[in-house]
Image 1: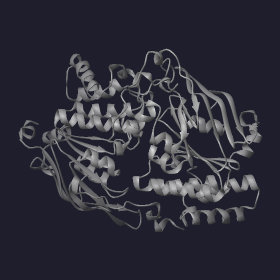
Image 2: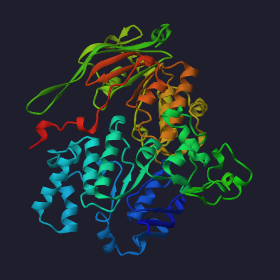
Image 3: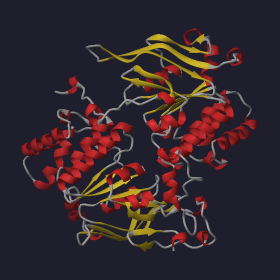
Image 4: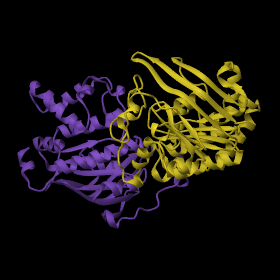
Length: 309
Length: 263
């Protein structure tokens, strides 16, 4: 049985300018000890999926489908049952850690809070344990500081400590390298990988950077405009992309000479009919603008493109 | 204004610039951010400014743009010392040297539509209202946007679109030198590719000189003709991009915790 399975998960936000379909018919599964990367441009719905799994979406979101975690449908749990799962079973490393921490509490208090709430141990031993994990991450002495006194990279580390202190089975990292210096990206990834391996957790790595996905994931799901367009083993998908969008995304990477994708990302209120990528696609056919292609599964690779059917 | 523009060669040079900040309320301490830095930006060329966080890249950019004064050393614009410019000449300098910042959302006023933000610049230039629409449309076209964005607010646009608008606004003043402080750092890799190509295209068309700040070696190589690398405020390399090999930039371990903050 998979650790986590999403079955035709759709998320729609009702906003003054209309209904925003942030995720439509997303289906994916994650095995134990596996790392799945979700890649795509800003606004394609990557973070929405992470927050839907954690049930942290705002009230104007309506969710359909199911999120099966170890046989339980997380969307059907009561808020109280869900609170027990958050942090202990499934934990998230938020993007922009400097903003995710509470600015008026010291780092140490915030990192030991999950221990107090979930394990009910004494404050004294919780602080001891939190100090231990901070030392292990090279932040000795930083626990007594406030988040604004630390640099972005240090807050990132403290965030990782906070999310992994209960050794969750599933760790979700939402853009963990955004805003970090180029030199620090690898260090941050290495830290996440070592935390993952040490506690034997599975990892969902959300990123817009294909290099990050390539260096740290087993499988990859490429999202465009709220839907998965290609999914498979990371080396296969990035080594030989089948979907034109994956190909275009790869071409815009630094080592490919920064070749941009023509056009702009479409509006999520009224996405293009048919294949959502067709207005920007170099291999457009007649059928592409009329009918939406299905996600075609064949031997460990799924592609949503009429060319691959 | 004319005096400066008629000089054949436009350049902006920081000569032996140092910058010292004073910090602490009771116990004043000095922190040296830049030490004896000399760089030059020429028209039509791109100078890349490379270095890890906290190496003084942005401070140097702000000094070159006239937003801060150096503690010692000089900024020279086409043969004239910046500190000797008279007020009219200074205005002309500020028009000729424009800056685009890292985070486009925070450099545009969230309460104003894009149209109002751009119109403000044209009002300052005393361009009559009836001609403004035409100029704004041209400016937007130059950065690959359509006129429909004029009535939108920054929050209704994507990061890439906002950055294009920040660029269009800087170009309205017809600058000769553009200082770009990590203009793609907060954008997606795919949008970064669009903006970088757009910048190169604008440089080819208008022959503007760029100071391009980044901590990404591949971006640096793609954009620059020559590179200046800073480390803790000192220049450690300056020369053509072909000869440049970046130093190993910091790991998470190299970050230091302020000593006096530990209690």
